[in-house]
Image (cartoon, rainbow, N blue to C red; front, side, top):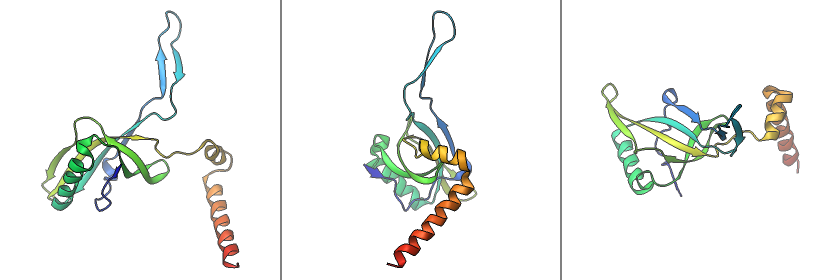
Length: 157
């Protein structure tokens, strides 16, 4: 599997949107309310991303898309922002490739694409319960305390 070139910039935050697909299947019954059932916990997420590339960055992107991503047919690893911050995602292109135009103000190539990502990093059930019971600030404070104490311990060995 290939990786998105690390020398290219990350997608623009101002033009970034996520759409999580449902992992629930709905069945209409002959009478009464429809039946809903969970069919997966790993429903894919679609992310609309926009990059602003210089001419050389755009050339690298197009070469990578053609030769490494096999014109959108291959899965690849890419750093994307999600609920746990910037992390590595497994992604592929959705639809008919990508669109691009030149920004006349900056003379940069604006490349737009929809990516499908699988298994976006999320809280575990235990992590969710911990945050719900103790709050984010308390958990982070405890994590920093434990990291400092661990460092002290190993520095004294």
